[in-house]
Every structure is written in C-alpha cells, then in structure tokens.
Image (cartoon, rainbow over all chains, first blue to last red; front, top):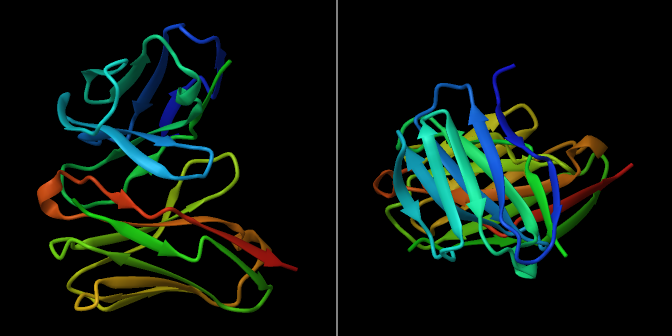
Length: 113
Length: 113
C-alpha cells in the first residue's frame, strides 16, 4: 500500500532515555514533516525537510534531532527525554514545497514516565 | 507568522442536522486552506481544500467557503452521520513558507444517532 508509515506506534520510556521514531513514505513526495500533537489535540509543526534539506525548524529543544537519510525517510531522534515530551508525534509528507495536501502517518504515542 | 483560530472547540449535533466549523487567519498572503479529519487513533486526513482564487467548493455532503476580505473560511457538513464524528482541523499556508501549514486548534464533532 502507498502510505506514510511510522514506527513504533507506541513508545513508553523512562525520563532521561534516548529514543528514535522512524518514518518512511512511498508516495514519491519531496517534502516530509514532523508534527507534535499534545493532550489537547493541538497540532504543531516541528520540522520540515525538502529533498533531505531542512527547511523548517520551529522552536524545538535541541534534544530533538531529525535525520533524513534520503527523501523517502525522515527519522526523529530525541535525547534525554522529559515528561513534557509525552505526546503523539505524526510524520507527514507532501508533494514539493508548494501548497498541497499533506499525508499523515498513523502517529507514535510517546509516553515518558 | 500566520495565526489560525478555529471555533467551536466542540460541536454536538443530531444525526441528519448540519454542522458548521469556522476558522479565521491572520496572514493575507495565505492562499491554501485545507481541512483535515482525524478519527480516533489515526492521523489527520484531508477531506476538502480550497485555494484563494475560489470562493466555494463542494464535495457531496461537505462544502467549504472562503472570504478573503474577512480572512475567514468555513466547513459545512450537511446530513451528518455518526461516522462524521471526529476531530476536524482547518489550516492555512502560502507558497512562500515552503508548504508549512498552520493548523487551527481543532473541533471535536459528535453526531448523535
């Protein structure tokens, strides 16, 4: 199936740990994103990559580091996890840098205990 | 930067009634306005979008209207069904911001059978 897939779907970890979330899209899109959705369902963009180049970096702590090995993959690594990092993280992709529909993955629910 | 406000935050209607969700935006350069539906446990999915050169767009039971002068746009769902129950997000973006969409805070729609 063509889609945006991210793993894992659920992630429970202790404070201070380092974790990664992986994302892959097989839609042939040039642009990929990471969004954070908090407990109130607010959806905020964190990063955006276009052809492996970082083009959007919102005010996100340095503990969050995206990595794009190729334009089909955008992984999110988080160092020294904090309780406030608990949220659902969505990967998304879209065609090009112009205004087009974003396709979202199913989300990764991160719980920091 | 762009600021998108969405109202109401929650909306409850009887099956068969209409539902209207309204959004306002601040950046007059915004020219693309997608609406996403997020079902429980899933990522947001585009249901309809409109560009600034169009005032209204309809797709079966769903319609979106745009008033560029007033900087607001609305989602209209007619003949609501229980499966329309979800969280709905409006968003706004323009071609100069690399496809980054600013999302509204979401509306939780409940359709009572």
